[in-house]
Image 1 (cartoon, rainbow, N blue to C red):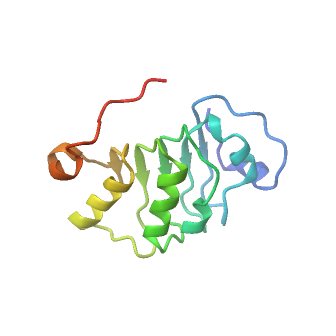
Image 2 (cartoon, rainbow, N blue to C red):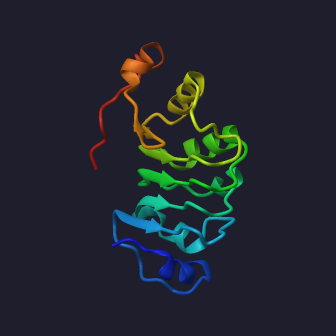
Length: 155
């Protein structure tokens, strides 16, 4: 069961929260967060989906410990200005990310150019969906990904 804004306020205030179950979905939207709450970082191994839309997060907010099991991240309508720094942080700290929703951030085009898409998929090797549009890397970028394994990891 996802954690929504009613419980999110407790997390943000550092109140005790029961340990999350494996494959949890956490929703912390519209809370004016400027950093990832410590309670989330403590429970990061359980989080598979993290929705952080409509906050005040920047690219530096994602310089955090690894979220190894995170597969989906939504950070729409935040304050992410430096896309390159954001991508480096996500690449390093969310190595298994498959879905990224990042629209409506400063310096993030509504319609990405082909080169921008290429760079995002190059940085995030396991990414399948960018801003809700599924991409088939083999068809779109055959030269760049011909040596990349596309098999799924079994857990």
